[in-house]
Image (tube, rainbow, N blue to C red):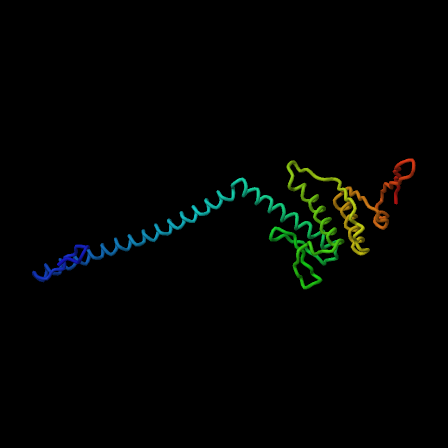
Length: 225
């Protein structure tokens, strides 16, 4: 008889020697068929693995093509720039507030982490007037620091002008802001100009231009500390 699709003859009649020979041939044929089947299975496993690999590469290529669209690429670039800006601003804000606040950006809004309130995160718009100014100042200073690395040809800002807002600060925060600005001029070699009516802050500026007004008009007086 024949064993199915493998066409293996199993002898039922004949001489002893003939039976043994035919039986041995059937065994060899069965072994060869088993080997071919094992090879086919191995090849199928390899093909399945290769198919999965190609499918994964196709998904990666599709996702990459989507992200490299002009709009998506600009969104990614802006996100990276914003992350760097917030990271730098956090260092500034933490210094100004004596370690109380960190600045984060999530859900398309600025938040602060209050380390004096169990590290509670809350929207930056909940800050007081003075705290809001401190956060804005931190962002402005961080932006000036980051522009050099983001701009082409190594462009840099050698000066920054801050216009008012200092009147909303309590004495402790005002001192921290002044100390931060002084450190900025020393460490970065940057000129910081302040427009302020706060005498306590103006007195800490080494070179001052005092503007006065009388019946004859406005006058500018340059003084040094």
